[in-house]
Amino acid sequence: MVIRSICTIFADDMMKKYLKDLTVRAVERLHERYVLLRLTDNEPLPEMLPGQFVEVRVDDAPHTFLRRPISICNVDRERNELWLLVACVGEGTRRMGLLREGDRLNCMLPLGNGWTVLNGETPAACKVLLVGGGVGVAPLLYQGATVSAGEVTFLLGARSAGDLLLLSEFEKYGRVLVTTEDGSLGERGFVTQHSVLTRERFDLIQCCGPTPMMKAVARYARQTGTPCEVSLENLMACGLGVCLCCVEKVRLSGETAQHTNVCVCKEGPVFNIDRLLWQD
Image 1 (cartoon, rainbow, N blue to C red):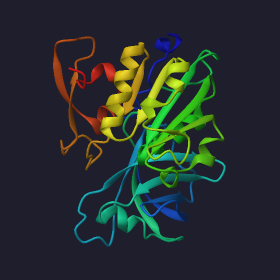
Image 2 (image 1 turned 180 degrees about the vertical axis):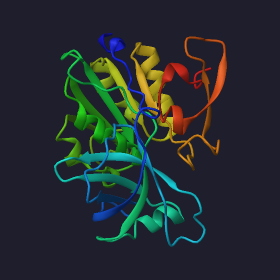
Image 3 (image 1 turned 180 degrees about the horizontal axis):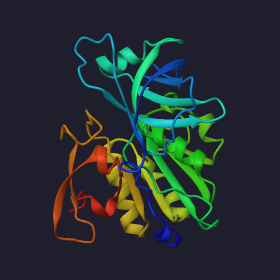
């Protein structure tokens, strides 16, 4: 596979972290449960890589004491905007969904390690499949937007057509394929049942979404011998590897029998599936 020669960029210890009060430029309600926040700053936004995340302080939520980790959905350099796709499921995220234009949001960024970067050194024939479900589609948009070499296919799944998010944005950066459980758009079923997986082969799969979906995609990748990365969604309260609430057991690098515990917020959230113990 051509992709095996490409190195993942581990950014957490190399990139400077910032604590910024960003200004809400726009709030777009995409769905009854999802909002897209477009944030900006008076200064140019810092460097951020696809797959990284931010820790957001939620004000005016009495029972929300810890920051909330939100994937970087996109970075629009021309408009100096950071996009955050928020699933409003708890008190903290519901409060974020009530933000209005001009409000300020305190963010610590960028955090974690992201996807393998597909750039000018990547063979032009490289085919990458980006698989997402629910709010897990968020980090795939920025990855697709930054691919400067290779061919991008997005495979997005949801319960119904109304639950699919940002389709027009994904279409700007690659081919978009869809599955819905009720068959209201695209092919009926789950992402791992889409016919493209039997018709075509890919050089790299990158996936984010509900854990059962990611495990199913990982099984497919192993069955076909396709390198695969997944973005874990463990609870990450501090984002700095201090609180230890996001620990995941992984294989030691280069070892198959020895395991260790790592903080997903520091070593991830993106991992090659060969390091995870899902199929053991």
